[in-house]
Length: 391
Image (cartoon, rainbow, N blue to C red):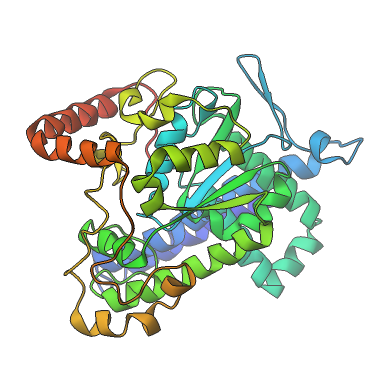
């Protein structure tokens, strides 16, 4: 019945599109494709989730413990379930999430991989259902209780993460907006730990706008609007992290990770109960190598993480934000002060870098051509390697 419902939904969407396109040219191709982009992902997502709900709802469950009720995944002798000490890395896009996961990916016991883009969407869909009294009632009437829904979603997420790359002692997921659902994820995966990447909102927004990173609800023509959206999203994630407490969620400031990589990677590994390994300070040496750091050809940060940790991106935003926005920064983005940034620090003072980071920066600037060649080689390698995941 659930699969039929999803199928009907898809047919209705296609019927709507067909009707619009046949009304004597009243609807332009642009409008039609906007409708495709708007409705088709929901239909595809509905099929995926409802198939999982169907499987969860019809599978006999003699016991009702978290471990026995979730699908167990076995890959090359590795067994995974909901009790895994999984690692979730999140924060705003362009806040250092890719750098953090690349440094962790260099650790021999950790596998993160590229963004899935699927996990935050399934979490968002669940939030939409829970916010709607009508949808919640329909689910209950169909016998889809919170327990069934949680089981299906946790199984789906675990399936995605496990099959996203090679087996590892510790599985890690890096999808920035998952941290907006950190509290819920902590319930699904009771032993999971969360890394909340924090970055100066002015730098984040400048990077989003200058790199044309499309994010739902962000107007890339307006620094003010993007900063307000940044403020709202980061406030939500910060509250979630605080709710979980310091044993489950650690805020990591991008600026401090860049300025003091050894100190902060030591803190992160200690938080994750992982032994120290020098490889985390040399992630660039493990790019696209077996068991190393796998890069995506579509992630906007891939061209940056091929380099050793450096200072180039810290203050690029200075002088790029409109004057009226700069002057009203404390009111536009109050989370800057909440997170410890000076809203009127322009340029900012993030602190003194470790000598190794300063040396890395100078070396990269001297050898600019070399690093451009390396970036091109990595892009080519990433494009043609087997098993590449389009995210």
